[in-house]
Image 1 (cartoon, helix red, strand yellow):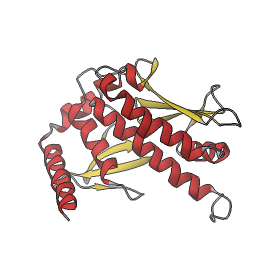
Image 2 (cartoon, rainbow, N blue to C red):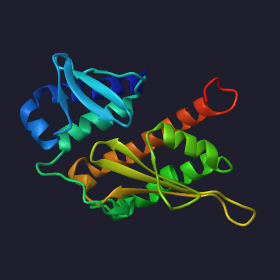
Image 3 (cartoon, rainbow, N blue to C red):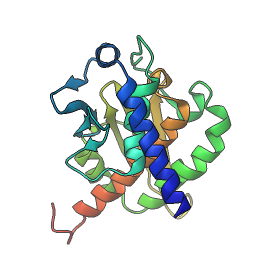
Image 4 (tube, one colour):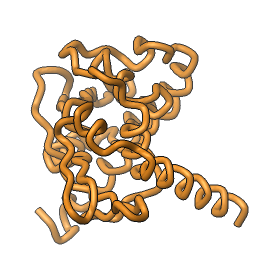
Amino acid sequence: MERKNNYDDWRRDWRARFLTLDRDALCRKLPWLRQTEAGLVVRYFIWDVVLDWETGAPSAPVELQLYDEMNILTLLWYCKEGAARSGEFVPFDRLPHAAPYGPAFRRGNLETLAASFAGRPRELERALLALGGRKLPTGDVGYEIEVFPDFPMQVLFWDGDDEFPAQANLLFDKTCTDFIHVESVVTIASQAEVWLERLAANAAPGSGRG
């Protein structure tokens, strides 16, 4: 119960921060945002999420988890003036200030992703396509997805065999920390994996979906 209360406090505090932001200044920093009468429209993966102007609460065509909401709100809060993608992709630990988090990222994100889809490369590919992925000529499965417009992530996967275990890597635009705090990049990777698992399950034979 205490953890739930902490999460509720966290969500409430970040929604309150959103309500203090200058809307026009925010849209100048992130010109792909849309203002509507109901709220601010944020493109998150393949979904349009609307943040209510009165409460900061999100509405979306899918059920968002707490950390999906936090990814969106921290992007809006931390994005720097003049942030722009560079087109150069690097591993997580080469992002500014990311090195201390590198070992945990490898264990908690890369190794987890590799183990999750070991022996299931086609399911991973279907999930990446469902998440709007663009195929890359790298790995057994390689795709680029858009977490937000101007915030791409590359998902690379090599399936295992009798000699080597499956391996995975996630690459980010080297300027992505101009858009969001480096710790939030970890959360973005984690939630991307959550959605890939969900979409893979939905697309699996016998799931009722193609």
